[in-house]
Image (cartoon, rainbow, N blue to C red; front, side, top):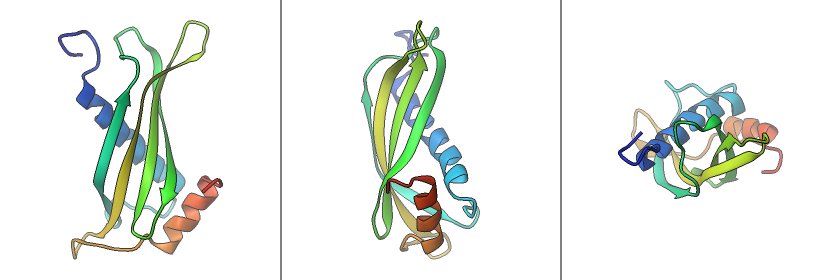
Length: 125
């Protein structure tokens, strides 16, 4: 919480990072953080409604929305539960990830196995 009594804006990016980590492990059973990596080329957040201490059941939705040759885009939504169990939207965002070879520190094409696993997890891609 910051001096205004709500979650500071930079923390939302941390939430995106946490969600992204869980997502990659769910969407790809082959993914190994010690072997495979990407860098963030761009990240943005649109703040819609502040998150205060009394927010109930906050959570983040994550999905890959687009895959290119070497990069892919992730979309995020941070929501909480309202009084009538309706969802309250707090923020939406996107990030662009570029695949890299960890040892060479160079960009690489998205591996076929990752494309296939994500397309099973995200059939709308």
